[in-house]
Amino acid sequence: MTSARAEPTITIDVLVVGLGPAGAAAAAEAAARGFSVLAVERNAEPGLPVQCAEFVPMMIGTELPDMGTSRIQKIDSMATVIEEGAPFITADFRGYMIDRARFDQHLIARAKAAGADCRFASPVRSLDQVGCAVIGDGLAVKPKIVIGADGPRSAVGRAIGAENIDLVETRQISVDLTEEYCATDIFLHRDIVGGYAWLFPRGRICNLGLGVIGEHKSRLKPLLDALHAQLVAEGRVGREIHRHTGGLIPVGGMVGPVGKLGATTVLLAGDAAGLTNPITGAGIASAVMSGRMAGAAAAALLDGDTGALADYAEELADIFGPSLRLALRRRRGILSRYKDGGQPEACDMRDAWIAFPQYWSREAGDALPPSVNPTVGAMQPL
Image 1 (tube, one colour):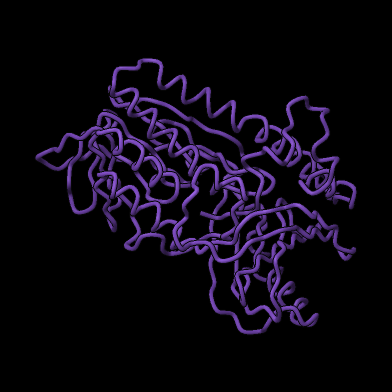
Image 2 (cartoon, one colour; image 1 turned 90 degrees about the vertical axis):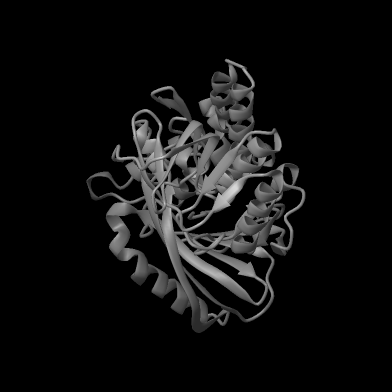
């Protein structure tokens, strides 16, 4: 980012960049503790456009008991299909399908109620090396703390030299379901390199999508078209496409999560901090949790707790580190099968997917069982 600034400059305690789940949670937490918070979002409307598969694991209820009107339906199981094989059913895979726009809007309403100044259509035009920012049409801001919650291509992360390097590209359509359904379907195939395809039900419609490594981005549309046609032929979904969306998912593990711009402290949360699971792409629950933690750490630092930054980084590592490291190993393992023109076998896909016991092998020494893994879920482009 450039260093140009407008005048006069407004001084605030906390600048939150991005008002997705991580940014909204951070803004609410810091404002509730009595500090001045400006939270800015480049998009014009809260929660829009939706770039998300819209599944959250059941455990999100411990972090966010009240999700407003965003819940659409419960999910009780997962069906994993490898190549053309029979589905493998994970019977106790519980969660919710949500309306992501309403979910974000609920979190933003909480931040506003706590006293945060939330502004939309307000991109950060510049962020210089002493932490001064220019917002929107020229508002100059000098925060004491910046919280970067601005997604996979975080400009805040880039400013402190903490960027997500490994990214998955996703494409998703919404189509009609021919009958009600309460499971998430996962499709693993050697042609879907570095990702998977999914069907997630939302009442009478479903989200149908897939993700691949960037080098295979050109294959997204034909692969998704083929899956859609297959499910139409099976009588499971309708032909009409109601919505297209897509996005990026960081899959390289945690970056940051703390840094400095001059005397200004910087914290990263959510996708900006690389907290999405490198295998499943799940990121909403970790965004809410890490956002709240970042807001609390900012408040503690402003209250004089000099250890707050180290505590934040350590807590993120303790909570998310084991599952992220395991997922990274599994991801690298299956991608290695493509070396020199090779391809993975069905056993390799089982090794690299959370439904199968071999994924959770203790060989690495730090795997978490899925019942307590905060990043298990499904691809969540944000």
